[in-house]
Amino acid sequence: MQVNDLLEDLFGRLPELVRDAVDGLSVEQLCWAPAPGTNSVGWLVWHLTRVQDHHVAELIGEEQVWVTGDWAARFGLDADPSNTGYEHTPEQVAAVRPDSAQVLIDYYDAVSARTQEFIRGLTPEDLDRIVDRSWDPPVTLGVRLISVANDDTQHIGQAAYVRGLLPRS
Image 1 (cartoon, rainbow, N blue to C red):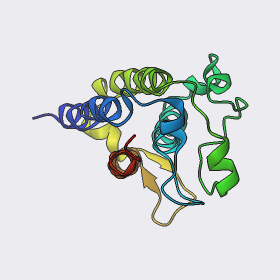
Image 2: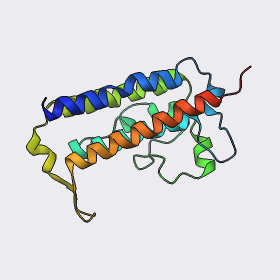
Image 3: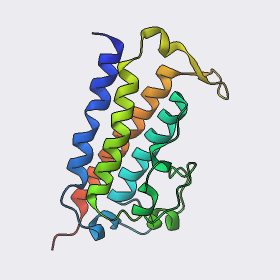
Image 4: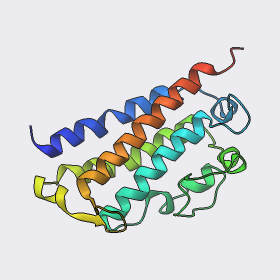
């Protein structure tokens, strides 16, 4: 198996998990949090998508999907490319209001398609390229991709858990 095949498989599992986490949920359910100051399903899926969008855009030297369309407005936010949800306050978490489950799916699918396209062209040598010298040791492309996948899988698991906590009507 080639390294890009392995990464394609890893990232290729996420779209179905995103769909499973949000499909059929109302806006109210997407924004419901199990306790004050905690994360909602909608925020978790938005955040994992924003992180992937932000990091992959940086790796390929292109604008984020977030700022190239009307995505931000559909979440009740500004198209600030630095807003990925990192260190959000409870008020900022609550301000992320997707207009539907479908917008979470569509935004993730757009980001995922670009990630998959990027990964398909990678060689093993590419993974050793330094992409961030602000860390010791410096971060390679391979480490950055694993970091993104790790973040995404943790957050999609959290979203599935919060979905299971939703009050039954």
